[in-house]
Length: 287
Image (cartoon, rainbow, N blue to C red):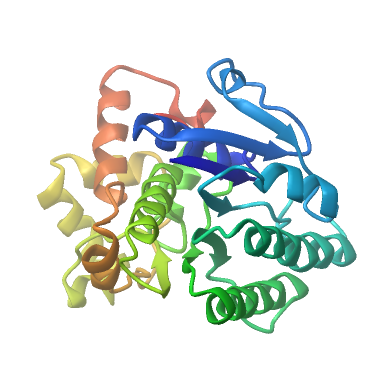
């Protein structure tokens, strides 16, 4: 199966492309700039601005499935204008879906967001994007997965660990969920499917709801020495942990997240024992 990945050279796109290759897919990368990583430079690449009809048509031609990740987000640095966010996220999504319609593509994964809503131009673009996916499904019968990703913006290592307890997710879980969604779409496991892509720490409800007080002891049970590490590195703990029911993703896609706060603590413990300067580390990294 040959798969087009738009936004392929972004943070999430690189991880998705590597996961696709590992799963045995043939990958065509599409973005405004080619990949810089040596392993990704070996893959097929087409320059594609999703706002440009001819770019998109050329990118989509001859593939069997599409993973549409290309988007601007409101947290981008340097900042992106609302006009650009809207044009890429809305017009670009329309152009991709229209090209898919012309090519008869029936397996699509769309990058939505937990920011979905009406609080900003970015969040509104995800509302419109999901509506466009629904319309494409109604018109063509295609299998489309709309994945509401939590945040996986690159950040310092210790901040990443703390973020996992809030609205953060490891990009490897993002990649695995995305490829699982494509595989399920290609098998016609669903028509139109939407799910959250987040971590799941397996916390008992009483610990989840009072993590600042009960969390250190729970972490200590999972990873001996964790409480001392949390204190040593000044890891900020939230009052409540954001945790979602991901059972539908497990049932439909066969996907469950693999990297949570416990996995982060295990990795931190190993690095601490080796005497690494974890304050200088940056994520994404291979934990």
